[in-house]
Length: 572
Ligand code: TNX
Image (tube, rainbow, N blue to C red; front, top):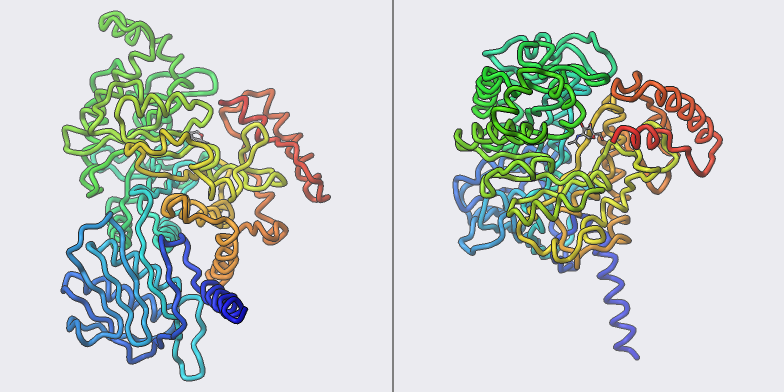
């Protein structure tokens, strides 16, 4: 009996300790201790190898900024209370151990990346603690053993529809690092704006960059090549790889505004949506663009888009030069030509020594399996995922449901997208992919990870960007990092509550799933213009039902009319 009582008390004390260890994403294993390590101004960070000095400096800077403590950095391993140690044991990339005893903190990994993730976990532990009367920070002893589930833990930001700029992107990269996300997919070109400086074709930014989704005559907004280098370096210091997307042959309207000679023509609703596949100069022009782009991104991965070409492709059937080419090449339909175009541009990328990344439409384009990564986004077409795996492509899972963060996260919300009334709640993001993807496919090594995509047609301000991203980004982190057997949604929600406080102190305008009325204005951040691609008759439906939905949600009605779902259904 006594023993039982003791066990219960012991477990309870362990539970209390565990509650203090609020790390997101949840590590593989945590053993809680009962002692305390005191962080103070005299603490020294020492490294086993001078190549780790940069990481020691990163910890020093972060602790100083968040807690006002001044740590000393030393390369004498014996000197430190906090030790960063590169070990020789082969491990999964990114894995680490973090051992906190009463007198030492040791982070060990085979790679700098792993040490960085150990530091990230340590910083999350420290963040939750207040300094005591002596100015010390006390953290509970523990032993953490951790490794990521997937190597690709991505976030895509669309800056064509609305441009957010360097400072916002850096803030985003900070939060990605906080959550151990490691791939930033940068959607830099689309119909509404071209956002990357290409020196050989300056009109791409001066003309193509002068517009956005809300304002078709905005001042040019774009990243210079120096800005891009700065962002890439900022991300690299946080072990985040940046991948640019130059979308083709569709979603090319902004480029075609600048250089109409390469346009593939117009159809109603989709003016100059594609590049011209029958003009030989188009291929050279795009190769020049890719060459300048490739030089800016050391990861040597170029996303070529390839999505939704079908919207503009009818213009191809109307063009005599294109018809002539199709005849000559014995193509049966415009889709063959689309694949021919895509394969040629993909060859350009691989000939530069880079990998080609593309949306799942490209699965049909006969790209080289060992040099291509497919992004499966159309959750309503699971066949595309099967096909991509069958063709031996590496695949990133980013299905619209539940990983499109331009979709609403609460059925009461009205300004974002919905899919037949379905929204992407944080619980759906958290539980991805295990409830949605078959075990056979999940076991495939070709699935290299998960990614959330934040399209910005309906996101015109930083505040709304935050609202759509937080806290779903935390659910994404755990979907990408934490092994399924370690996932526990109840415990995640407890840890999330503590992160919401961190959002408050960082001034993040977030959606609170535990109190949906918190930060209410963002619910009704309606887009200022209606999508140009929406057919005329449904524009009225959208407008009217939107107003209705807003009124309803103000009255606290349980269900919104899903206005955006209607227009979305029409479009896709
Ligand atoms: C589809 S996902 C698109 C984007 C839109 C998005 C809106 C994809 C490859 N294409 O152009 O912004 O839907 O949810």
